Amino acid sequence: MGQTNLEKHRRYITSAYLLMFLALFTVITAVLAYWLARKVAVVDDAEVWIHAQALWIMRNAVIFLILAAFAGLWFIPLIFFYWDSMIWVKACTVAGVVFSAIAWLFLLNVWFQGFSKYMQKKAVF
Image (tube, rainbow, N blue to C red; front, side):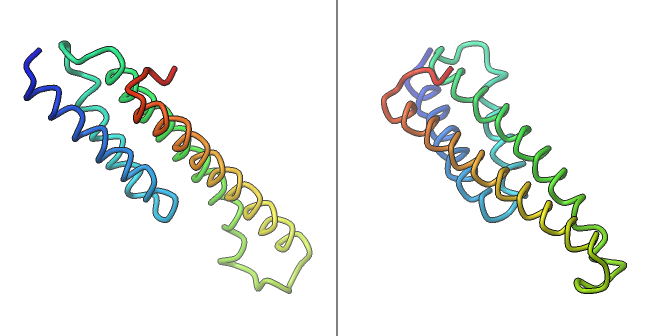
């Protein structure tokens, strides 16, 4: 593999980790992180540790998007009812906040794990 390909793959993974961190604030950047990591994952001649990093980002971006979608479902009753109108609306909102916190903490944890291994140039799995 040429040196230019390695540098290009490292730039993609670095950008994907940056977007993965920004996904803590908006979900759209998780999709962009997945897309950049996929560009490295489908290449046959990538180094093993950088290929593992790409798969790590892809896997955890998908898991985060699923967790975020599940957390978002709990906020649907707020569209139809006021916050103080019924007790079950409060319960759904609290459950949505809890599941959102779980998704956020999950992404923060895997970002720390993956980025620390990336800085050491090791496979993350």
